Length: 306
Image (cartoon, rainbow, N blue to C red; front, side):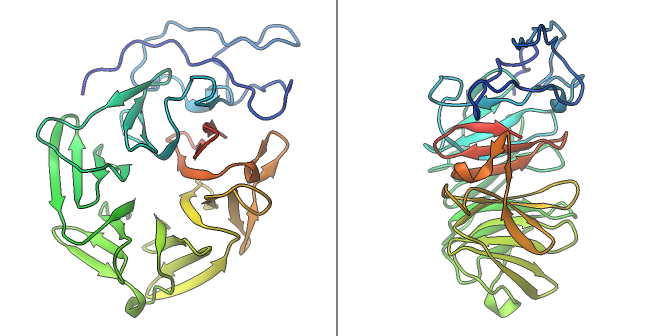
């Protein structure tokens, strides 16, 4: 992988929610805010490595990228972050982009690696980038292929890493859809206590169990062979877990009771705040970065960092 270029601090602020609303400074400024009514993002000349390691993402002002204003090349529906700080995005047309803090740069699989169509991307804790295709699962580190699984009969569309570093993937074409990937593939379904089918999202709970989100509006916590089930208002497309243990749920439609949700105190509720009305977005992807910021990828309205 080529070294990231030198970058200035970041990108112009997009006031994406309330017309005329001023963005507020968050978590230690990297820019000077001049005057009372105008917001300026000052350019810094500090060398950058991916997203500049000398600056936490919380130092950047709340930002959005949209296809309409040219700051986003396409709608994105998977987001991940590798250990070097780069953010990676998979677009709706199945193209992979690497984000260096300023630009979304097209990225291609190394020569000799062929995947019919990229279905998902995932960064593991050891610095690898996994690319999932309809039949292939490939782990890359730089331009080097570390693992390449070719599996028959699957359609692997979601992935999560367990605390032991092993991967769990969803096979949407199987009656046993949740699969543990080691040297082989072992899959689990109803006989193992998983009470929903047509699962679209999987997320480790950090304690040996998994959260599963279904197309029919089901949210299940599967642990020790048992399932706790929650009903949500729509199709669950993405899941993310905050550092405080809060589960974030992305629904693939917008409107009342849709969009971005939170599971708190046993109930799933819309995330609505004055600067960010989560019900107004059809969610394609959710991810917490290394600094604890939530990145929200939508199918039609761009990417937001909350």
